[in-house]
Length: 441
Ligand code: BYC
Ligand code: FE
Ligand code: FE
Image (cartoon, rainbow, N blue to C red; front, side, top):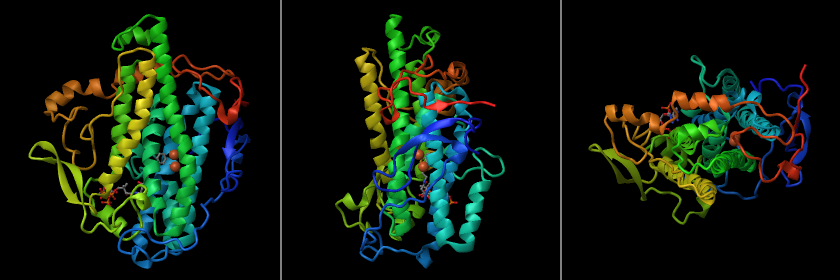
């Protein structure tokens, strides 16, 4: 279920062969079927403790704590399920890669997500016996978008129809991966913590691909607008005629992928999350750097809720609000890169800003699942929503237009019309480096 085609191509990939800084960035040409995954865990820290919840201060577990076995297995299975799902969603994208550089980055992300599945399967096989093996088998049976055996979480059954979606996905959805892995890296179950810590080193590159991919798309649009003397970012048809993606459509794509990713944090109020935390299985983002008691039985946290037809902040027990807190940390993390995108637009002198929509907008999980709200957070009637939704989310027309731009560009050092070249090459390679040597039968 990996990338379609390109089985005989030589791809300039980074392979992790060990966890020390010299070992995890070996670059060379590899044919994807020959790519090999290692089981890589961050070094064991002696005397590591459970750092939060009811077991705070006890020695971290090297074996599965019997009373939490089912919960822990569930967490590992959900994490494992997302990894191959993203590869399945992206498998057709090689055919329309806007450059060899981008194609190589896609394949790099794919092989690493494959390794992340392997990392979770390793835990299931090694620590859970028969039921672990059955769950591991289940991970191979499910497929993104399959009617009978879909992937577990919503966003991983959506299509990734084009390269802009791929960049938005790696920016927004891989960042959920980062936040969830950070929380699992805090786990009192030490093997899970160690494997997640190493996975996070790889996750950074996925988000880099997303952030720079969107940024290069914006840069190219602004450049084309300037060359054509177009100042108004809403002069859509003229901008599209230049073979670039207009900024309002970029905003719609961001709206879609951001909100699908918000759904991945579960309900704002969740007893599952409270139990994970209390049991010492899943912590908060940067748990050990937070200045509180790390038990949270007395603490409260402000949660945005839908009360009497209005969106309001309500104090809730901090334990049940764990998902909300992680989502807040996620939104703050997302906002940083969006500001860097806005700098590119500002520098080009175009009056437009990309913004993150309100958390009540376009949601399918939690407090706002049954609410229609605008990106500004105004509650709407169904009629108002239907009238305006195409202004906020990609329409069929937008999709068709983007699809029309997805022409492969595989000449060394060349880029498709809608995206600029990167500032620096992978592994500092020169501009015309042949990141993928395509030999087709
Ligand atoms: N779609 O109690 P609640 C990554 C279910 S991404 C469908 O609020 P909880 C990656 C939920 O399972 C990171 N169903 O949920 C990125 C529950 O079902 P049950 C992946 C959903 O448990 C890019 C019910 O609704 N890792 O690595 O507090 C590329 C009640 O919900 C969804 C993790 O997610 C949804 N979006 O929170 C590659 C970490 N949301 O129990 C890779 C592990 C909720 O009634 N997972 N439901 O059958 C978790 O910590 C939690 O399972 C969640 C959900 C945060 C996902
Ligand atoms: Fe991953
Ligand atoms: Fe990732």
